[in-house]
Image 1 (cartoon, rainbow, N blue to C red):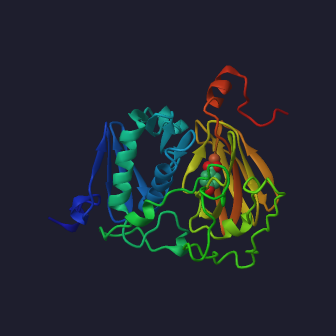
Image 2: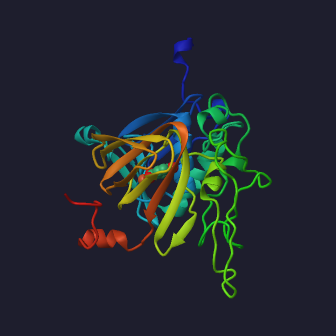
Image 3: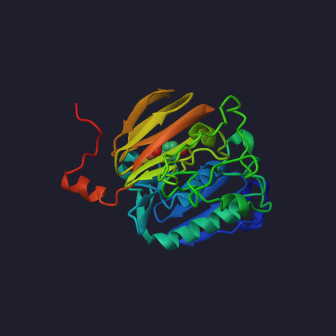
Length: 325
Ligand code: PHB
Ligand code: FE
C-alpha cells in the first residue's frame, strides 16, 4: 500500500468515536469534522465545528436556526429539531443535494453531547477566545468534560439577588479579563427605605461582564416577563451564524463588532453592519447574523423569550421585522 491510500477520516485509528443518528453520521480526523447524509458529505474545520456544537448544546438549540456554516445546521422547533445539510443554501438546493431530518430534542442533545465530549481534546476550550485556549487538533488526547459542562448563567430575576445567579468574583474563579483592566469593580450601595429591604436590588453590571470567562455565550442577567437581557463578551468570530425566528436587539456596550448579514433561507450575503460602542440595532427574524470582533468587547443581546411569538408572527399579529419603512 502506498501512502496516498491513507484514509484521512478514520476516527477510530485516531482514538475517536464515530457517531450516527438517523441517516446522518459524524466522523473526525486530526483537522476536520465529516458529516455524511444520503445526498452528500460535508467537511468543517474541527475547531469551528466544536465551537458551534458547544453553543448548540449549551443553548438547547437556541432560537430558530443555528447554522454551523452556510451548509450544516439545526432548526429548533422547541421539542423537536431539524438537522439539515444544504437546506439553507440556494446552490445546494438547486443541485438537489439538500437533506433534512427531524429528531426529538432529547435524542439529538444526547448525541451532540457525546460528540462534544469525545472529540474535545485536553486543553481545548470551545467557549474561549483562540488566544485563551490550547488547540483542537491531532489524535485523541484526554478530554475537557469539566469545561464543556459549564452551565450558562441564567438569572431567575436578576444577578446578585440572594438565591439567584451569583455575582462574579476573584474568589469565585472569575478574574477580570485581560481586555477590561479599566472597568470599575465597585458595587453600588443599596439603601432601602424601612419596609422595602429585600425588594430593592442593584449590582455592577459592567464589573460582572468584565469577569466573563467565555466568549459568545450570553448569560441571562435580568428577566421581566419575556424580556431577557443577555449580555456577553465577544472576541474573534461568533461560532454560529444565527437565523432567529423572531426579532432580537443588539446594544453595543463597548468597542466594535462587524456583523455579516445573510438571507436566512439562501445564505446570500445581504449586508455588513459595523456596530460601535453606543450603537443599537434590531435584527429581523428572516435573516442570519454572524459577528466578528477584533478585540474582546461587551454586547447586550435583548431577546424576546415568548413561547407565543411564533404563532403571533404566523398569524400576522407580531412583526418579523422591527420596523417597516
Ligand atoms: C446571536 O445569535 O444573536 C448571538 C449569539 C451569541 C452571542 C451574541 C449574539 O454571543
Ligand atoms: Fe441572534
